[in-house]
Length: 567
Image (cartoon, rainbow, N blue to C red; front, side, top):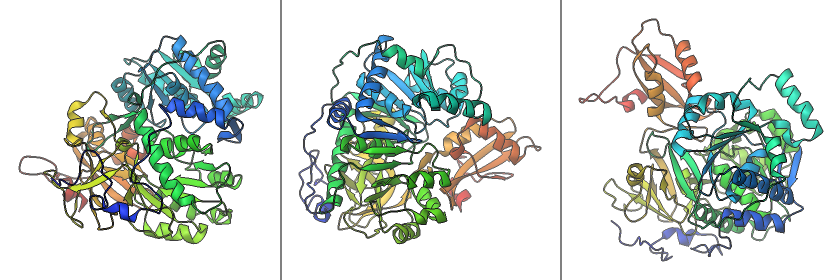
């Protein structure tokens, strides 16, 4: 193992070649945090920026002062109903105002947020609720029918059901009527332990929040991910993990704004789901830390509606993924927007393709700065310099207080240019996987490095390039999809003898899922299998192509050879 990598970073350019490539003024290490917890950060900034907008959704905004009031109610209600510090509270909502209100309210109560994709099926939701031991679920009524099926046999004691119109006052009554009765996008549901969000808030208005001590090492989030293997696990992220990543990103952001006219109040565009770690940290947390306003986009797939919303705001920071950037560029109306105040465009979640980056620069006059990270790293580990316009085709440099080492399978450090596993060490690296010490041991080296599962190399300047993934993970529009999970679901169909899943290139999503099946029932059709998958898996996990075969390629011990199916 390379002895130059110490447990405590020393900050020498010899040990860490990336330091010589840092923007001027960016330190090797982050300073001690000014906050003890995410609650501390949120409360102090709500006081400092009380009159500013903090979140905007569908034309409705709330201020920092209102965020403080509303989150206090959520925390008070949870405490009054017997939930205590360390209890897991699940949030299953899209990008609407009730999402950050619930999340920051849970954190203020000293409890742990379990973020859940609102598009999950009942099977996927049940697994996450059971694994986390969540006791309360906040859910939008559009998905309450899924919750109704999923909470059976879990520890859920209360379900708080929100409606889109909750925050719109009298206008909300009309909004809810249209969604329920005209558009009919709210399926019927019945949950005995449910309480309406508005009723909860009315009750909470009469309650007082109890101050709970929160330490930096206390758990803030269980962020579920496949990790580097196919079993869905909760990455344990502490308050310190998130505060450290906030500080690291802040230093990098300062370098981008040096010498520029910094707006008094910035506006972030939040088109990525807040349940995803990228939006959670880079949009919500960074936005609150900077006193910014986050414009929440509930359905970024509706590109015309997204562009219409963008036209109403002078946005400064736009985190996104390659597929979103590409979709916008392919809409002529996007080219008519005013990009004069756009300062930063941050690409993550999946590789940014050079043609997309070049077209984006041509249309907007702003570069896409690509970064890299995982749920296990809170998420940002490396970023390209934000003060230059060049597209490097790499994932950039390790951010302050972060070390990256390229290692072989025996944990030996490799020289510049040699491909190995990208390993990361820093204060943003998770505490481990929730109640899975065996899985934690697989990814955490003895010296504190996290094994990412991604293969790449570092050049002499400290820039890292990803060349492949160690495992068989498929990356669909920035979301990890693991063949094992899909194969397990498909194999449960009575008409399937055996199956295998691989990723294939896709122009829209980067990669898509392809399913290979050997039939048990000769009458089995692709349409039948697709319908079965739709019942059991959220959309991005479902196979886009299905190919039937008489047999699947295997090793001499009977293991299916996915690599031959990819060729």
